[in-house]
Image (cartoon, rainbow, N blue to C red; front, top):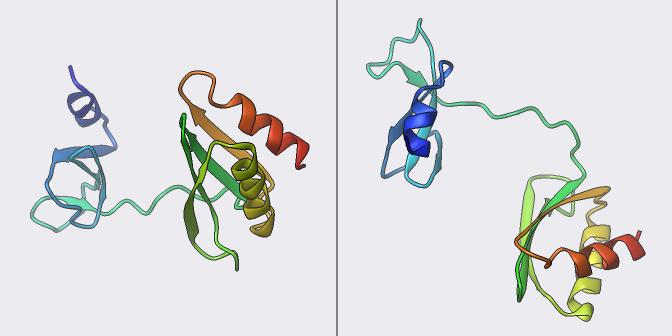
Length: 127
């Protein structure tokens, strides 16, 4: 069973293979919409509204060997911004300043291998 087949089995949602977004959430070619029994649309689906925000001042970092991609709240607290930074110490320090300017309180990092070590040390040193 692949991920698409597994997700289709979810009772609260229906996943269908899709080439476009069509108002739902799409990742890897799958389109996710919530199932509703009382829905009058011909396909019986509606757009998922998303999860509630629990902590707004949080950033996510996808760490790589040469570049780090960061998603954080916008400067005025509205929306999200994505930026990329190099893996050098100077770039990591620039990353810390960028996060501080957006009043980020905590960071979630995703890393393959040991690429998380240097960013964690610079982030902790930067507060």
